[in-house]
Structure formats: C-alpha cells, structure tokens
Amino acid sequence: MLSAVRFAPRALSVRSACCSRAEPRGVPNSPSRPQSFWRGIAAAAAAGIAVSAVATCESVVVGNTDDFEDGEMYEVKVRGEQEKILLTRLKGEFYATSPNCSHAKRELATGVANGFEVVCPWHDAAFDLRTGQPTRGPALKALETYPVTVKDGKVSVALPRTLEKFKDAPMAKRDPKNTQTFAIIGGGAAAMGACETLRQEGFTGRIVLITNEPHLPYERTVLTKNILKTADELLMRPAEFYQKNDIEVMLNTTVSNLDSMTKEVTFAGGAKPMKFDKVLVATGSSPKKLPVAGYKIGNIFTVRTPDDTQKILAARRGNKLNRAPHVVVAGGSFLGVG
Image (cartoon, rainbow, N blue to C red; front, side, top):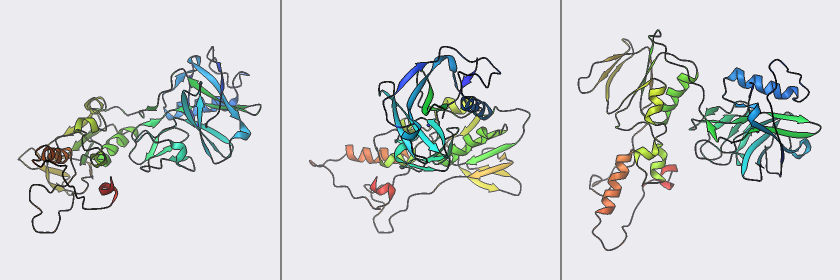
C-alpha cells in the first residue's frame, strides 16, 4: 500500500471526498491522482517522513487557486471547522502543514514565510514547509505535512482521518561498530538540540551528554514564566527518548578539565576520565550577582534552575508577614519582563 505525504492551507469552508482505496504501485500517471500528488509522495519517501496510508485519508477541497496569493500563509479550517491546517503558496506551488509551532504552539499563520521556511513569531523557531522539519530555534518536533493537488482550479489536500499535531524526525540507530564518541558538555536546549541533530543527520557513534544538574534537559526560559512548574513538567524529552536513541546522559557530573590535545574530559570527584573524538561545549551562562553590599542575604535570588524557583517558593511559604510580599525584579530584558 502506498503512503501519502503532507504539505500547507487557510480558513474557509471545505468539502471532502473519502479516498476509498490506495493507488497501485508504479502508476504515477493514474487519472485519479494528478502527477503533483505522486511527486509529493516521492519527496516524502526520499526524506524518510512518516506518512499516512492513502486508503485512510480523505481529499479535502480548501478553495480555489485564486483564493490564495503567492507568498502568503493561510490558516484553513477543515472538517466542520473542528480542525485546522496551514496552507502556504510559494512560486505557484502549495504546501500544507500543521498550523501551530511545535514549541510554544503559536499559530504559524501569524509568523513570516521566508523562502521555504515558516518562522514562528514568538521564539524564532523555523520549519521547512516542504518536509515539516525544524530548521532552527527551540522547536524539536517536526510539523506534519500533507499532499496538495491542484485540479480544475481547485486546491485539495489529502488529510488522514486523525490529524496529528507534530512528529519526531527520523533518527539514526546506534552502530556498535562505530567507535567514535561525541561528547556534549551542558544540559540546556543547545545540548539537547545537538544530540537530536547528530542522530537526525545520521551519526551512529556514541553520544554522551554531560550536565552538572540533576535534571534532564528542560525548558529553562519557562522558569520565569511559570514559577510553579517543576523540573519534571519542563522536560524537553522524557527519559525514554534518550534510551530509545542511545544517548547517554551523565547527570550531577561536573567537568573539571577539557584537554583538546589528548581529547580527554576530566571530571570532578575522581571519576574516570573519558576519551572523545568530537566535543561541543554548550554550558550556557550564569546569572549575574548584584555588585552591591548585602546581596547574599536570604531573600535575594537568581533564577537559572528549577531548584532556584523552589527556593523562591519556599521563601514565599515562610513569609511571616500578614500581607503579600513586595517583589523587586532586577533586570528588564526577556527574562526579567517574563
């Protein structure tokens, strides 16, 4: 059975026709499927994208070609306006994807189309409209993509019975014969992204993520947006993800020395040094301490980890005053305003 890909639409009333069967293999010129549909199938297969079976999809007419201006993105409501997709027209071609960013779930139609990229307006996450894959920014999961056909001036999108919001990119499997070791020092979003990119780009050697924190990589910026969130609620990926993709994680581990000549990492506490072939240092930065007298008193805090926010909450619970405490935020940038 053939598989169907996916590509991008806007907000109109639509009608659909159920696809009752899959096309036989090797029939690229079948009259029931335009050649553009089969080109989409081939593109998805070449990219290794997981797709839905044609026999379980339906062809949804989303509008006339004249309804969509070239270079514009449209959020399209489908199936009784209960679901949405994003349709983008670029150089006469149509691309249909999931309508929201996989990072902060913002509507992508409010963002910017930059070539074949759609850029989220919130945190600059970007996705390839042709494959749905994230190309930069904090997003980890890819957008779903759907095949688009144009016939007799009508734009149709092949949609599965259930629209999945996002998908994981294909990952390479660990090959025991590959003895290369890629060490990643740091436990933030950059380190997490590096781990995933290595596997997505076909690296089959050993990947070791080293962090001095007790937590798996988490969404650090959310700490100042929702102080009540715990580390487990902020995880970028669950523990099973690292196990499935053979990514080793060393928690509570501090690197005391990195020797680029001998390609060796030394750890504090006397743990056995580790050899590496490649290394990425992605330790991030530390909050600035106030350069004033008294900054070490118990009610002045910095925020970088979930443990820091827990200290603030503990201080709030221990407040003996019969009124709400006064809070001063030193710093007016992205984190301070958040």
